[in-house]
Image (tube, rainbow, N blue to C red; front, top):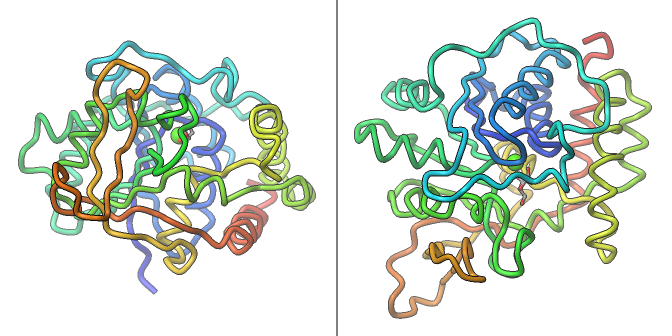
Length: 312
Ligand code: BDR
Ligand code: CA
């Protein structure tokens, strides 16, 4: 099996960190580079966190490129209430032995997406870097994007909007309008992709990386238990994108036309999803995740994280 090369554009972030580790633990994909964006925390913190997570897994050789430190139009608004002041509160993470690359993330993405063998873009933060790439490099496009963001139903940052899209709606709208093979992994599926206490305990018992992931989950679960007492676990939003590449049978998708609300009112950042050919909506511009096998997803995460070398 030839692994699918991927670039992760992310804002670690607890679930971004687990997405990185899931990719590293999975022979179906090859993580060729990580680009970072401001989102869950400021760019300096998300970049440092990406470097620490790679170091934890013994993969400090994978290059990290820092990108945008604020959304294209809006003011920056981080998610410290979910991810803490560091963006990865909970465990003690190793100090990275490598620094981020000097090239800007958008320039790195431009080089990667003008190659003939383009990696798949997995985007798990606000879409600022990707929107900037599309605005500034007309010839550089990925063939395929899998993004975590949006919701058909209720949002999480506001009743209307999911955090990544709310943070930079203009960038998200640009991405959906680009006419690429785009898959939206929204809250409708990620709220069915739960890591429960029993999963956390199995990872805690599985060596050094598993213990760190369990400590990440301990912190991350506090917010979700308080905000979502109806959920029997914490949503693993970002890892669903990687899991979808590893095993496409986990998540069902449906073609839809998506338009992002770029107003400033209470619906800011809402992803309006239409699959009924309503007037005012164009042809489908994305595949939207509509359901997931949560049990198989959780088993995949636990098994793969537990397989990471104890000595890493
Ligand atoms: C998304 O927002 C962030 O807090 C998470 O990392 C995830 O990418 C979920 O709404
Ligand atoms: Ca994220």
